[in-house]
Length: 136
Image (cartoon, rainbow, N blue to C red; front, side):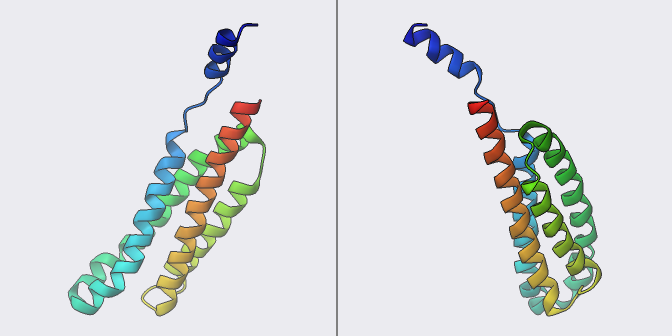
């Protein structure tokens, strides 16, 4: 096979990243920004606490839905449970923040930790999918 044919063949196997990992990372970042800024806003505007506090359950459902959307097809492609296990840990941290520590200092701590773990899970899923599609 000539070099130009190999280049075309190699390019044909290039896989575009799935949108669910990008969306998952964006939602995790939104969650983190929300969790970091909420205590500041609450400190400045006490009336905002009830409005912003009600956002956690919505984010938790959204993050969980995107996780299923991203990690099930990702697993089918790369067969590594690592991203899904990271996601379960991240969702667990976010759920603890929302259900156990809402309105407490630990709420922000668990939320930021959960969002960080979710970003790592989506990043790892993306890396594994790229690796399997370029080497497979």
